[in-house]
Amino acid sequence: MTARSRGRRGGGTIFYDRDRGCYVGQASYVDDAGRRHRPKVFGETAEQCQDRLDALRGELRTTGAVAPKDLTVRHIMEDLLAHPPAKWESPLTVRGNRDRTAHVIAGLGKVRLARLTVAQVERFLDGLAAEGMSTDTIKRCRALLRLAIRRAERDGKISRNVAALADLPSGTRRVSHAMTLAQVNALLALKLNPFWRAYIVTSLTCGLRPGERLGLRWEDVDFGAGVIRVRKCLKALPDPSTGKRRLVLADLKTEQSRRTIQMPRLAIVALRELRTDQARWKLRLGAAYDARGMGLVFTDRAGAPRWPQDVCRYLKVLCKRAGIGGQWTPRELRHTFVSVLSDSGVDIEKIADAVGHVNSTITKVIYRHQIADKVTVAATAMDAIFGGAGSS
Image (cartoon, rainbow, N blue to C red; front, top):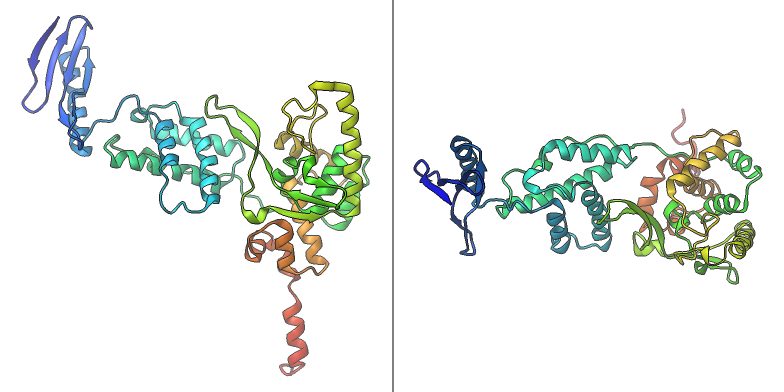
């Protein structure tokens, strides 16, 4: 049974619900579609209930609606992906935003939108920074969350955009370097097992991205033609249902990333040795080898994909053992590839094709430290044309 009473004028209805053992406040409004809603609030006292009802009606006056209590961050992020902005024309943009949305859902997906706070958003962003993500990636994750909440705000489902108020932490921001020829030789002089020799040689001589190396399949390696066909990459993405990261084969960043690379003889020899080594492990383990059936080139001894952070960690150990310092990362092997080509006088357009860039401008921006001091053709030509005309 309930004892009903009218609240103060314009404040909605408040009544005591004996079955619930508390006071109930109820407002009423009609949405844009003509549907009537009667949201409720609860309180131990009539005064507490009235305060909560006032807050609810304030939200109603501000937004024209009351946010559904069961609406979560996951709901609004999935809605954003299902109905993307018109400016998301590029498949690359859609793919990148899908990956970043997965990070947001893994970190905040279960949180009810009405209860999401600035502090929660900032803790999520700090967590991304702690995982080693770049400042740009963290910024883009916040921008996606802000856009999704803005839509909810527009539709009257929330009254404040907490993502817009959250401070942005600093992520990783490290200038990459390239190895010298002497450093490369020191690294290759180590007694390396078949995996590491093939990984380092392929990285240095073929210029694949770190994810492309770990996502390389044996079906992409054509020993007969002497080429590698770059078609997939390995990514560590959070599972939306569990939040735990898992390794998956994904499409490449751009159409230009799909490329065919002629293998140097050194790479062919190293990859053949690795395949022979894997065949021995396959005989030893039987059906347990490559349980996921991914057919990858660079795997652990059970044929499973390798986690990028594990590869990065042990590469540092090898570099330190070679006496060249333990600061090197897998992506810097690719930088070394670009530097070696540039030092050898290979045209920037050809380098861009080799590394899978859309155009040479991107190559110049990303690898400016490797090629900036190699551009001497113009100065040489000017000296030849004008001679000593400017000398005194």
